[in-house]
Length: 216
Length: 264
Image (cartoon, rainbow over the protein chains, first blue to last red):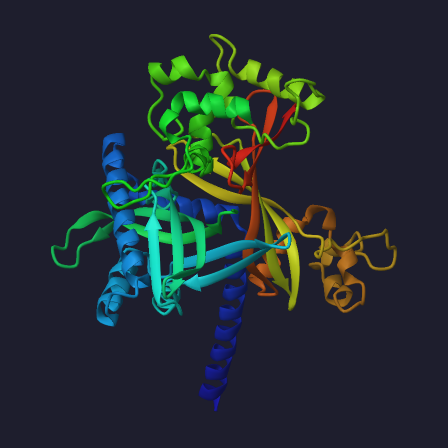
């Protein structure tokens, strides 16, 4: 009996302790500046991996190649002349260019009001794959702009890419829909361990994409 | 408009045409509007600092010989601003202020630049949120912070959210924590917190909308949806506030442009 009571007391005390701990922890997480500073300090552990301006310039070129790869994938996914298997492979290739939870946000201005739709990247590619046109032509302009990389508090480097895209959808030979959009793409340069060689190396990943319709 | 076209044609003589040209890579050559558009804030800063040309190459003596910094900065102003239309023939207060601004920025031997690592950069992000099931609008005010190692990040420093209220506190003689409460471990709080207007005992002057906004997100009462519009303010040019907004239009003067300058 005594054992049971002490067990119960222990449990109760334990629960109280846990509750108290959770409350304190929550408030610390939510509002404590010290905590944020500590977090930043922890994140600064990776600061030893400082990239030189020359290295960052080289990564800018690699980013250009990645963007080019994405453009090729988008063209194939949309183009009706390619088989479903090829399109599927291109979707897989395209998704590998992105961080896992990257989103595509499409905003347009209708009657003075901004309408915003956000899709997971895979959904965007799947929609592109199955557009109801008999022929689709997607082209890009020779004007990819990539900003300089800036170091973030987590030790990763961040940049932004900007591309123009032209979309044309046909029914037969008739042009049914066309638009020009601007895509602003988050770029992350992060240190990742190669699962095969067990060595860390810098990897460029594309992130969220903001799509804006260009007014005609 | 004609003036701007002449200036740009000095630099991009082959591109003042509406023809679509496809190059050897199968890509379409961009139009002059696409090239001159200020695509990102980063590009705005590069152009303001007279570092990069329209097509993103380093500014060299050839470019300098054709377009000087004053003209280049002038092109960064929203030319469709009502205060600037026809101001070349009839100057307005704002066009005079703009010219003073440009003169000060481009002063010989004292040229001013926007720092690559400035923390005097603020963003106003209009956003939509769901608060207790209802759609509401808010504006987040963010500041870019830069530490001593040039590591950068944004912090939300304030928020405008009319749907949130700081509880109004009037002097209330009934609900209060008596002056001697500390002597008894503030046991009176136990009783006070049962009263209907217990919030009067909090010093709400110290709680701002930002704290309430953060707390409501934490409590999952407030869900962020998305940002609909962003505006920037740069205070890195001594005595001036530069406001920058995105002007999305098919025009040689488009993208991230100066919507206002203000002397402080």
